[in-house]
Length: 330
Image 1 (cartoon, rainbow, N blue to C red):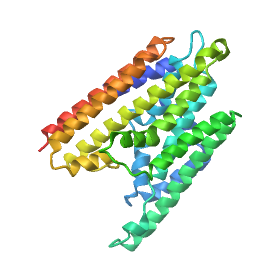
Image 2: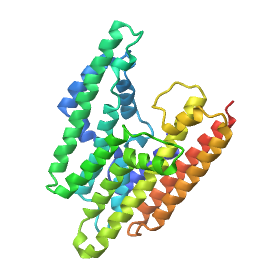
Image 3: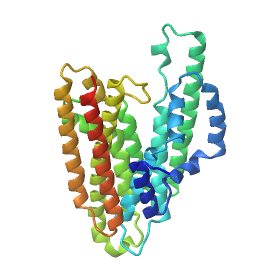
Image 4: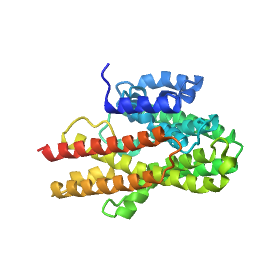
């Protein structure tokens, strides 16, 4: 069977960490409570509530990219674990937590502002959106409650506080005023929206290495290295998402995801060519930041370190391809 480059690299990553990415948060998604909610969500078919698209993306992601965050945590864990030790149960739990928290926040973002959109809408639209909002709230809250329970099982207040801060930063980003003309402001937004949660989970996972007491003096610096790399990875991943959203807009295809701040700015630009060049330079600069951080990663497990570098290169090449498509579109 033919596979895309992402499918191939994810398959190899799963073999390295000995854990399928599809199982990262499935423990929470197959519970009786979520099954009950899913049966109700079927009633939204045909209503165009955004919760349906999110559910479809989570269920039918053939690339496996939607579950990449948990896999990144496991690969970082493997990279920082000295042989002959392997990824332990606590580190797998951290991977499940970051993926489940991200899923919950994505679902909560599907809430529709009914009062703002009510004008010139039929009566049944109001009830459909109201019902969809209730389902999104219920499902997202359940997943966040599952995350809270998993955090409590660590019996470690530092872990609870660190992950909670990451989740709080992600929520805060939803209310941030984004200025894409100010690189510092924009990088701050990216950090809050995706970098904070992933980087904090990577940092925690490294601290939970098996037999860490044998090299306590290196633990703090290793945690900081893992955190720094994952922050830059999120910056690269975010800019690539923006570029892909821009391609969809410029080609007038059906919108299947939200429009990112950079995409909005470029769509309103009078000089798209110059702005695409700016985007290209921003992309290259971000890739350099990731690879510079990558050089500092330890070489305890060369396979894990190598696969992380391949992911960075694949993201970059995908983004370059999308930029070239933008330049060719009329």
